Image (cartoon, rainbow, N blue to C red; front, side, top):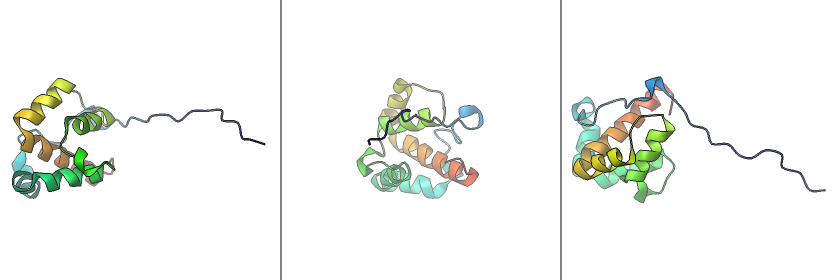
Length: 110
């Protein structure tokens, strides 16, 4: 006898407090360690972010990764906004994403 599948997998989108970033794009001094890592070895920070999100190391600093994260936590924005952040302020956007992950881990919502 073969089992009958009666329901399909569902996508779960987590919403957190007001769906906002936990720090601003240029709020680098709120976590100097992340800022220094993002400034001098951004590829390592990108790999840390990808690892946190269970993704491939090459996915860390991309617009898609930022968009997936924003969507998962209900953070308002757009693909165009993600692209502008990545292209104009690549180090700041990378640091913002890592700071946000760290804060959500501290709050127990990551």
